[in-house]
Image 1 (cartoon, helix red, strand yellow):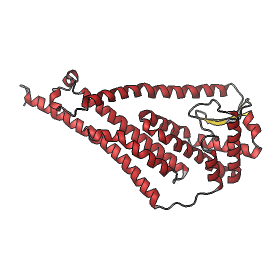
Image 2 (cartoon, one colour; image 1 turned 120 degrees about the vertical axis):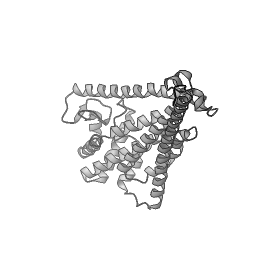
Image 3 (cartoon, one colour; image 1 turned 90 degrees about the vertical axis):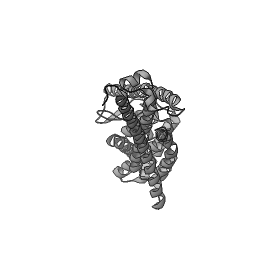
Length: 317
């Protein structure tokens, strides 16, 4: 088990660079789904590996082995790294047990506070205009989801550009893009090496909304102009406070997004995307299979130890 259990912890180091390159070759919607799924599977496998390492060490404690009705020495001496690895894994799991709920509560508090503000101001449907000279606009998830826009942003855009902005933010709400962000944040909390997927995931979500806005308005040039002008206005005013799980048209590498809207990407050959997809699939399969193999080995070891204990017992068969 001690060899297989390390693979889920190391595979993300290889998978993240490959995924970043592969996401550039995929349509935005496909890239968002692929990056989120990849991050969650790798994070789940690595967390399972930590749990197995901690459990392997805990089972060697006499009082834990007594609960399982076997003697600790029946599990074997194990690797010299068994006890240190178990201690580190247990500490990591304890840290995750504190970090993940804390982050979840923080996100919920931010969303609730933003919705309370919406409830105190007049709105029209899913649109809430906030009196503020700072240009800002974002999609606020929840029930109901709201498009939050300041009076400063409305003044910075023309009427047609405002429609593009609203279509962009509405696409975030309809597509429930905050769930993709939440999944990515959970994966990063479980395995810090997955932090490298944050930027490509955010970019894919913004490009997804850009394309939705371009289809809704029927004008890619107008969409590009609106995104660019909104980003310039928001950038000049500096960062604005907003919930971390909210999405905004002014986020990410805006020049790259504008270029993608104005210049449709040339068709990409099939060989490279397929090769990257196969490599990523291999990473996911290896990570999940290694965690499963480690769990199976540990389970078999426990059953063997329990069987030997029953055989050595004077009341055994």
